[in-house]
Image (cartoon, rainbow, N blue to C red; front, side, top):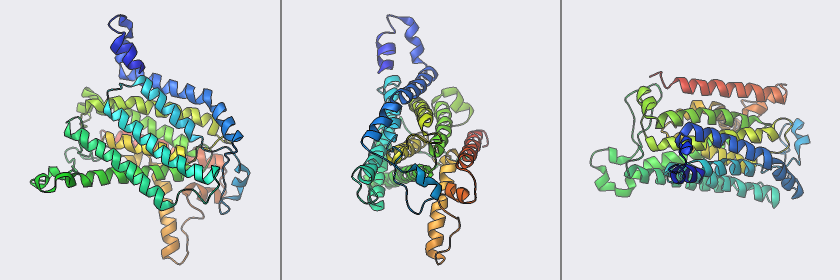
Length: 379
């Protein structure tokens, strides 16, 4: 909105406004705006959550040290979503379709998390949405993102060819029209593999962030690092010179999503101010699913979903620990691999203090993110 007003409308009359054409400048301002929004409206949101008695429920089977956190305001992810979307709308080009795809994904996954939190915390019925219902709606949201990207591919502003880390030339295309003769026979069915892949990536990333959100500041700190890495990757993917130098797929319109990534970094830093140990507020599913959906969507847009395994390395390890624990319990006569899952609880049970677990996982997330960035030249 401000980009449209200050640059597209007022620049011809006041030339210093040309600074708003630069993506780096608008990304920095989006990040700062998101940070200030989160810091300023944070106390209001926390007070309202406390006023409506929207407190965190602590599971009986969870670590005993977490019992004291019961009643801490949750659903603070509403603050994150607001702090991401408002600066994105203010500082990005409103005509760019990829920005709106990212905005839609954040809202859609946030809405699913909001429904889950509302049933669980506000209505105090059961444990929220059933696992089947949650996965179904996440799949629908992910498929909608995939369909939108397929449409953009038809307009030649997006490429469905996936970038493979460490490989220069091989870029597989999940659209069946890349296979000779199939588009004529299959029609719309040719889009199914790509749409299913996007849905899988988004469902996986949103749930991985959700599983990581178990300690004060853990998930949001890892999100800051992952979003920072995605900001760099998105910028170079949309930059003509950098994309050619790094031999990336060059999609100029994708670069505008850098503003969205910058807003995610700023919003996450602002939320960490209130979520740092001891937390004043928890993000709830509305925050974790929205952030996971946003991270996955950006990775898909820039065709780096395989690199997401490194960008969100801690999220992946947390999710894998749950899968392995459940699989071991069911297949090995109730034998467990970890003392408790997700992985951060395992280290708590080993005697690590909560703060130590959080900081060391942040360090791990930073190492993963830096490695992800180095793969740009390791080809």
